[in-house]
Length: 290
Image 1 (cartoon, rainbow, N blue to C red):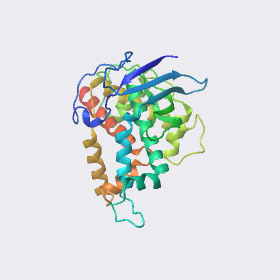
Image 2 (cartoon, rainbow, N blue to C red):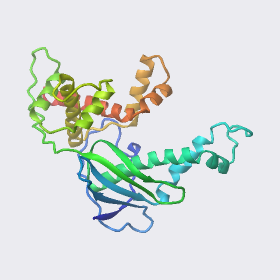
Image 3 (cartoon, helix red, strand yellow):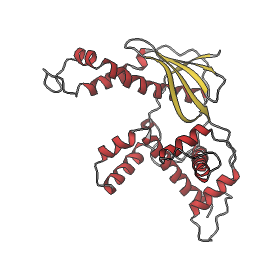
Image 4 (cartoon, one colour):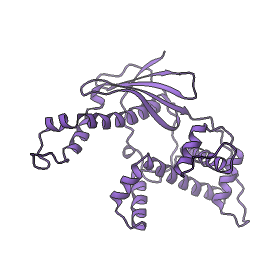
């Protein structure tokens, strides 16, 4: 079983290029060297379990988690504790009183971040959510988890400058979407289609139904557009996401903070980010095919 130590590298979108920039990017590469002195260590092990998922085991030293731990403790310090003034509760009391909740939050945050960084470093692309299992998380100790996910299928793109938009009255975005779906073929795992249907409150449909096909096409189109975005260097940053949330909050007559909290449930922010990528990519393709 291959083992690789990886240097820590931030995946924070704030450290990337700005809104709407278009640039060429090299493909990710696996790192197979021992980290230099002072670099944080993160280890992954690639293995399969004879099912539809791909799996990796990740491990990171406590130094990789300590900042996240401190920020989570700081949030719990804002909770009212009987016998203390708000914000004046000693740290050790906060940690003892909320230890389970703090470690649960840390486990979720660490699995998501460290798993994402490991996949980026070794050049593996996941399709859909990355689920964490067998999590080991304790203060002062290395973090370990088993991650399972579907591998992104191979997507062979057509010539994106020859999508043949006509003036027949059909929205150019719909024309481009249909051309892409007709030109690119790959399979989507049933689990992802079921998850997509569940987001629409549909749980009683079967493969082959119109609803199933529509959900599968939505997933396929999103993956195709995201690959085109990567190829063409189309990016969305946090400012774009924040602007859209603020815009929708105003439309729904609520606060930006309340709407963001609602969107964050169930990975809604990533879904919104994907939607913005799709919108920007379709606009780009329209310009390229006029």
